[in-house]
Image 1 (cartoon, one colour):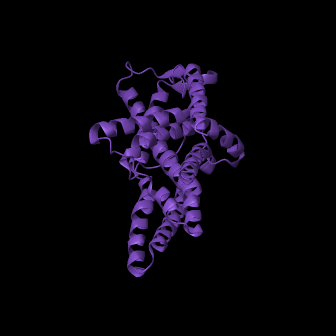
Image 2 (cartoon, helix red, strand yellow):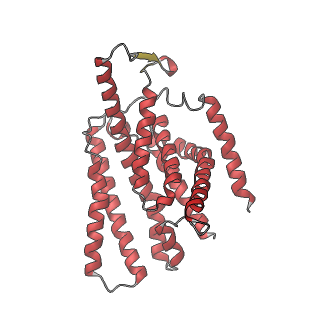
Image 3 (cartoon, rainbow, N blue to C red):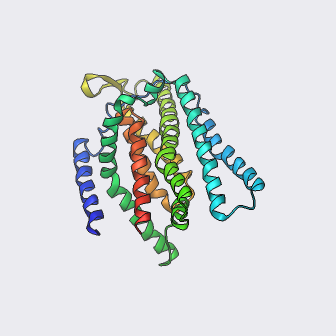
Length: 301
C-alpha cells in the first residue's frame, strides 16, 4: 500500500506537466476568464466572516458558561454543534448576499445545478493535478521546520482530526465528518472564492480602468482573447492577483501555521478552478475531496 501515494503523485505530475505545456507555463491559463458582474461594496464579504468567527466564538463562550460540567467529549460535541449552526447561518447569509448583488443571482455567483456532475469529476482531476505541489509544500515545511527548530519539529495535526482519533463515540465523529466534508467546504468556498475573490478582482479591474484613463498610453485598452472575444489587456493578471490574495486570507484563518504553505497551494488551486470554470461547485468539490482524504488518512493511521 505504500506505493499508492507515489502512484498518485506520479499521476498528478503527469497532469501538471500537461497543464503547464497546454497553458504556456500557466501564462494563458486564465486568458478567457472574465470578471463576474456584481455590485458588492468592498466591506460586504466581512459580514459572513464576522458571523462565522465572532458570533460562533461568543456563542461557544456562553454555552461553556451554561454547560460547564460536561465531559470532555460532550464539550467538543457542543462546540462542533455551535460551529455547525454558525456555519450554516453564514452560508444562508452568503446566499442572500449573492442573490442581491450578483448579476444572474446565484447562477452568476457560480451555483448552477446543471454543472454539478461535470464539476464533480473535474474537481477530482484538479485535486490530483495539484497534489504533487501540496506534497512538496508539506515536505518543504518539514525540512525548514527541522532546520530552524531541530529534529523534534512536527507539524501539528488539525484539531478536528485530533478529535476523531481521540474519541470513540460515534456521534461526535459523524458530526466532525459532516462539518469537514460538507459544511466547511461550502462555507469557505462561498466566502473566500465566491465573495472575497470576486470582490478583490472587481476592484482590481476598477483600479485598472481608472489607471487606463489617467495613463492611456501605458495600457493597451483591448487585446484579443480566447475564442475571438475581446478582453481587457492583462485581465488574467488581475485574476491571478485576486486568487493569491483570497488564498492568503483563506490560509491565515486556519490556526496551525505549519499548514499554511500547503493550504496556500490548495487555495491557489481552488481559486483557479473557480475562475476557470465560473462554477463554485468545482472548488467546493475539490475542498471536500481534500478534507475527506485527510480524514481517511488519519483513520488509517
